[in-house]
Image 1 (cartoon, rainbow, N blue to C red):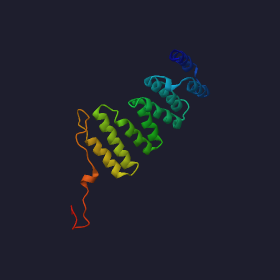
Image 2: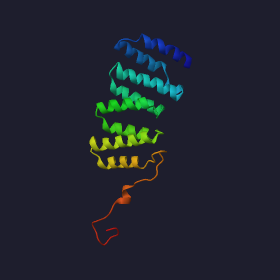
Image 3: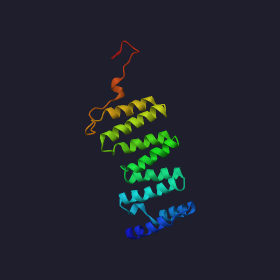
Image 4: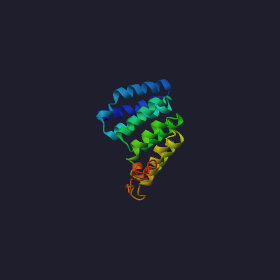
Length: 174
């Protein structure tokens, strides 16, 4: 039950001191806690704890990334999980995955300045790390499409609308 899970959690947390104990704790916690049976916010909190343990105490960042992504699945607005993913994926130079995470969370940000900053970051990653200038421009235009106060999209840019044909003078739009 939920009460039993809470009662077990604190003593386990306090008793854990060594790396080996952390590993046993995560195994027990993973078996004992069924995230599907809990409220999504509680599941996000507990999964975030597991991710933090894998990152901080066990230095297993690949597993930590998986758990942080799971947290975002429960609670897409979980800022701490996104921040940790940003740090780990940047440190490991996993730029493509980071741009995918940004795409996942940007729509859940209610503050237009947060969305704006995420689009700029994504554009910078596409340009500087992935050498994808078209995707960079697309991300930057998404930032410009936002209304500053509300975050509503005020206009949309489509590359197709701005293409010209300069090959055949006998055809339209030469």
